[in-house]
Amino acid sequence: MLALMWRRFTKHKPAMLSLLILAIIVIGCVLAPLVVGYDPYNAPVELRRQPPSLAHLFGTDELGRDLLMRIWVGGRVSLVIGVAAMVISISIGTLVGALAGFYGGWLDNGLMRFNDFMLALPHLFILLLAAQLLRTLNVPEISGGPLPIIVIIGALSWMGAARLVRGQFLSLKAKEFVEAARVAGAQNHRIMWRHILPNAASPIIVAATLRVGNAIMTESTLSFLGFGIQPPMPTWGNMLKNAQSQMTLAPWVAIFPGLFIFAAVVAINYVGDGLRDALDPQHVE
Image 1 (tube, rainbow, N blue to C red):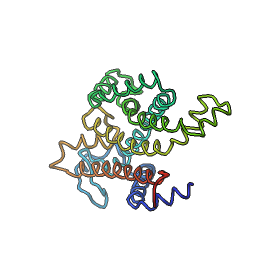
Image 2 (tube, helix red, strand yellow; image 1 turned 180 degrees about the vertical axis):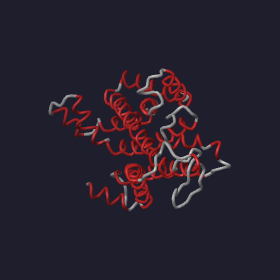
Image 3 (cartoon, one colour; image 1 turned 180 degrees about the horizontal axis):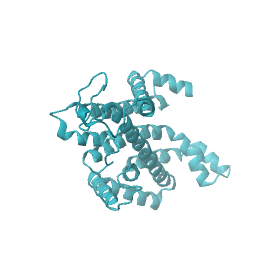
Image 4 (cartoon, rainbow, N blue to C red; image 1 turned 45 degrees about the vertical axis):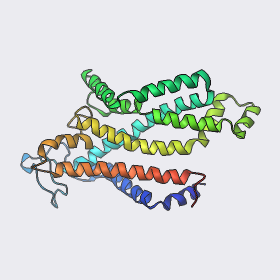
C-alpha cells in the first residue's frame, strides 16, 4: 500500500516539485543558522540597507543584519508554529468529530451547534484580542513568544477538521467491520480509535497538511499587524511588518520574506493535493 501511494504521489508533478521546495526550505531553516557565520540579531550599523550581493545574497535590513540569515531563522519559528498549531487543531477536531459522529444523538447535536457557533465568530478579531490579552499578562515565558500564538491558532481552527471527521465516522460506523468488532465484544472506545479512526486517517492527513499552510498564513497576519511574535525574534510575518517603512529605500527587505511565505504555503497546499490523490482509494490512475 505504501508503494502504491508513493507511486500515485510521484505522478503528481506539482506535488513532487513542491515537496522538493519544502525540503530545501526545511533543510535551510535547520542547517543554515548552524553553518552560516552571520548573526541574525546584531550587525554593524554601517552595513544597513545593503542591496543583494555575493556577501549578502538577499541584502541587509535597516539594522545591517543579513536578510537571508534572518529568513532562515524566522522560517524555523514560522514552520514550528504552523506544525504545532496544526497538531492542536487536528487533535481537537478529531476528538470532537469522532465523539459526535460515533455517538450521535444529543451529543452530536450539542457538539455540532458549538462547532457552528465557533465558525460564526469573527476569527481575526478573536485572534487579535486573545493575542493582546496574552501580551498584557507580562509573563516572560510566554509574552511575545511563539507558545501563545500556537495555542490561539490551534484553538480557533479545529472546526473544519471536526466536520470532516464527523462525516467519516458517520459513514464508517455502519460498515460491516464495525459490526463484527461489536459482536466480538469490543468496547466503544476501542471501536472508535482502533477500528474506525485508522480507516478515516487519509482525509485527516490531507486536512492536517493543508492546516500547516493556513497556520503559517495566520501567524504571518498576526505578526504583520503587530500582535504576533515580537522582535527581536524574527518570523516571516514580523519581517514584513518591519519592512513597511523601508519599501522605497530597500524593497528587498519585503520582497524576500514575502516570497518565502508564498513558496512555503503554495508548496504545502500542492503536497496536500498530491496526498489527497495518493490516499484516495477511488482514485483512477
